[in-house]
Length: 447
Image 1 (tube, rainbow, N blue to C red):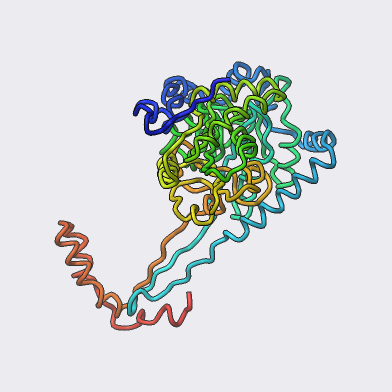
Image 2 (cartoon, helix red, strand yellow):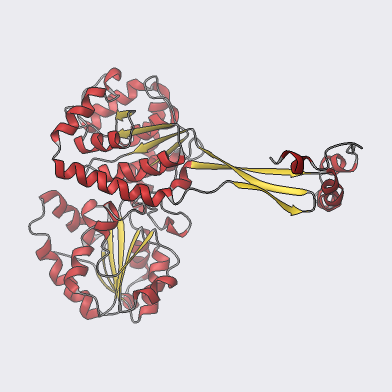
C-alpha cells in the first residue's frame, strides 16, 4: 500500500502546495457543472429536483413524496436496536449540555460616555436548512451536531435535507435522531440540488435564510456558488485530520487515529506531522495491516487518499511541526506529545484541538459534546466550529441624550467634513434641539 512519506526539508514546493491545498483542488474543477445544476433548480424547481434525484440517487419520486411522512418516523424507530437509540440519546445530552453554555447574555445598554449609550439585541435567525450527508455512509451524529445548537438558539423553522436510498427511504437512525431533536420537516434530496432547493425555494420546499452542514466537494462548491444569495455558513467540505506527535507517542494508537478521518472518502486527508522519523516509519508499517478487515469501500477510500492528500510529514524539530499545523489549519487536530499542554497554547489555527492519547477523533466526532462540524480546507484560520452563535444575529442599539449629542456632535462633524459628506455634517450642525424632555429618557424608562 502506497502512503505519502515526506522528509519535509527535501520536499519540492509543488508537493508542499498540493498537500496544503488538499481537496480544495477538486472543488475548483467542478464549478461549471455545479452552476448548471443550480441554474436548473432555480428555473424549473420541483421538476429539476425530481430529475436529479433519479439521476444521482436512483430514486423515482414525485413532488408529493419529497417530504418525509409522519408514519416514517415510527417505522424508523422500530428498526433500531435499543443500544443504538440509547447511544444517540446520550450523545445528544452531552452536545446539548455543551452548547447550552454558549448561550450569550443580552448586552444591555451601557454608558460609552456621558449621555451616550450602546448595546446589542440578540435574535435567532428565522429559518435554517441542515444538510445531512449520506452518500458514503449514514450520519445521524451530523444531525444532532447541527440541530441541537439551532434549537437552543431558538430558530423557528429548522429543515433537514438528506439523500434517499434507491427505494426512496431515509436512513432510520437519521429519522430517529430528528425525532429526538423534535424536527419534523425533512426532505429526501441530495447534493447540489438539495442546496439549490434550500437557497431558491421550490413549490414543495420553501427557501431558508441559512444553509449549514458538511458534504462532498459538490456540496461545498454549491454553497460557495450561492454565497450572496443565502448564508452558507462555515466551509465544511471533505474530512481532514492532522496528528501532531513526537517520539513519546504510541505508534499503534497513532496509526489507528491516522485512519479515522481518511475512511470518510477518497477526497479526505489524514496527516501525521512529527519530528520523529522512527515514529513516522513505524506508523507506515502498521497502517496496511489495520485496513485489511475494513469493508472494501472504506479500504478503497483510504488507499486512494493516502496517495493524494494524506501522508506522513517528517520535520526536524517540534516547533517546525507546530508551524506546519498553523499553516495547514486542520479541521481536526490531535496533539500526542510528551507535554501536550505546553504545545496546545501555540496552536493558532485548528477547528478543534484534542489533547492526549485518550482523546481520539472518534470520541470527539460523536460523544464528548463540542461540535464536530468544523471548518475544512484551511478555513480554520478564519472560521470556527458550528455553535449556538451560528444561529443568532445581532442588532446594535444606540441611544444618545440631548447632553450627549451636544458633547459628541463636533467629533462627528470633523470626520464628516474631512471625508466629504456634507449632508452628514449638516444633519448635526442644523439639528433642532428641543428645550424640554429627552435628557434622561434612558434613566427614567430603564430600557
